[in-house]
Length: 172
View 1: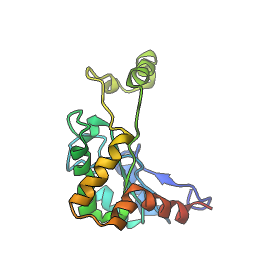
View 2: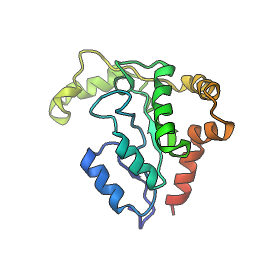
View 3: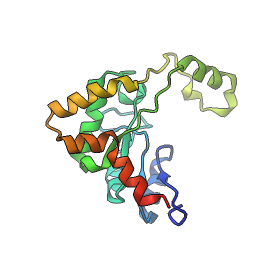
View 4: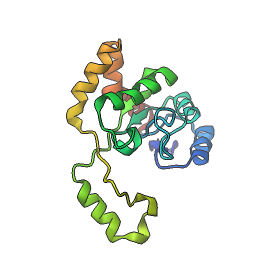
């Protein structure tokens, strides 16, 4: 993947696989949409050592907007910010981005899951439909970052410039 200029994304890999990737990567690796397990202990969220290994490659962690990964199906902007802030303090602001993974029609998503029972793990059949943060929350998230002392350059990085840096470094 490094040789042909393909972006390596560890979002849907397990812990061991992601750590193996970081050992052999010759360029930036990303978690395109993952949250901090230290903030919300969900098996899908990443551990601090994974985030640090990602940052050592020059990569970016994109904070995801799925309520079940933010908190207890919590999509409040303040809760999303807690994940951003955790990663900023852990790995530095140049390795943090936004990767909302927005789903506008949750019912259709779960109709697909329910109609293909053999294709998805059983734990994806939630009694409570997950909520998703929406792109319309980004201005409020921006204000939160500024109120917490993030400089304009840091905010621009988190809102997209960090992703551009990685794309320029990887794509051929």
